[in-house]
Amino acid sequence: QVQLVESGGGLVQPGGPLRLSCAASGSILSINAMGWYRQAPGKQRELLAYIRDGGSTKYLDSVKGRFTISRDNAKNTVYLQMNSLKPEDTAVYYCNAKLTPVVGRLSEYWGQGTQVTVSS
Image 1: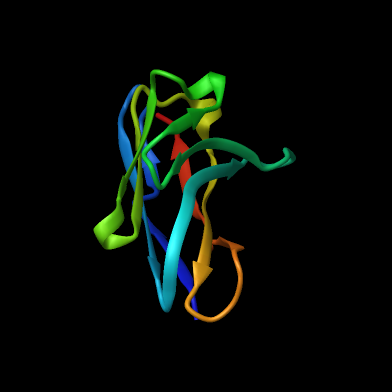
Image 2 (image 1 turned 60 degrees about the vertical axis):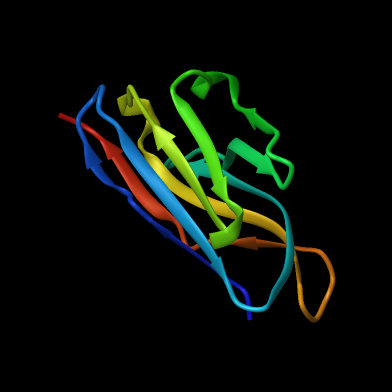
């Protein structure tokens, strides 16, 4: 069974940094892409960034230059380094992976979410 486990959320002051991690575990054959989404209260979930297995990345315009996604393929782990955080970045952050398990077909998996609060 495949699981995505996030860590690194918390309370941070405006302008501060925070780093999120997400580790995929279980019987995984291959991972096509991993990414980060967030959902603020009363808003739709939005894609922040993703990284493909080849290393190419894509970002939401509002986080370009502030957020950096990276990936450790050996550990099946994706990171989101967030700098210059703003109060409007407050949300629940979700990890996402498109992967093929050892048994089964290419599917999408989600982490449980981690709260990020930017406040003084």
